[in-house]
Image (cartoon, rainbow, N blue to C red; front, side, top):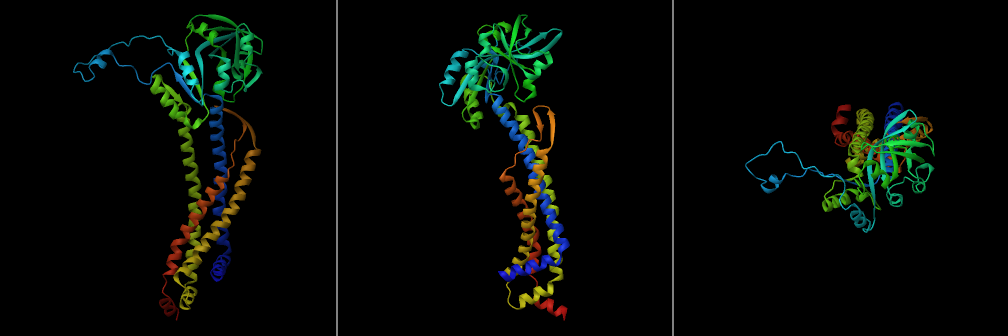
Length: 414
């Protein structure tokens, strides 16, 4: 085995320039994979953790996934007569027996549920009029289903009880209105109800769509503004095991009939974009490694062409075909391993450089620079890609070298 390794090392050092180029190709593929993976995985992990922290895991809404059938369709599902232009029966929106549903859900281990009355409103402060979403909550139950209290920059949830008409605004919404804590604003609902409300808190989640539009008040105040006393239109649910959100949501929907969405369903489009991002990342880095693999293939093919007489001599003195094949496979693996180690160093350096860059991101989420997640799995996956590609690149020339006939080679040389 020592002789085989020495021969393989001699072949590579004999063609230093080509060997270095191939090693650098592998290193670049590995390094860029680690950097891109840390960048994309960091944003994806940050996004999911933000959604899981800020948003309830499951939301039950006062609507049905499919419209209810007309009486004639229920009575005669396969009837020959078709009815057109029927207007559905108008029903009062709201979750029936909401308190009983919440009590039943809270009795299940690992589930916390809280009532919500969600309505639109116009908020006025001086000459500023801003459209906002007003969410009526029960502070005691809300603490169990969201991180609103943790995200408060000013005030507390308890102040909703102590103020006459307290309201908590998102940081962006407060900025648009130009208000600060303890200012009095006018809130007008679509039902025409007007209330003077005191700003008792300002929160910041880091998700701009929430910070710029959402506000919170007591459940009773939201019901008064919407002119819907004792009505709730959403039940917000948080689970101990977030991975079971889809299963639990499906079970709750089948039991109560109301549309119940897990957080994965709510953000399904965004999560689908993450799949596309990962596909682009693997394709790009795979292309770099394939180019590097062609370099390895070229080196070993050239070595075999130049060393055919040496291969014939080795086989004539009793070196087996397996050993000949192993020599060239070791050359490919050596290039892959050295390139992998250098690529690890390059990838770590790229992550450190990206982490040092600072800028403000104002979009769906707020950040002050690249969001990175450097994981050992990225290094292992990159190494696997590199070693597999280099081994495959070396396999075909190695097999060709092992099949060379020493008699024909030596006769031709003579």
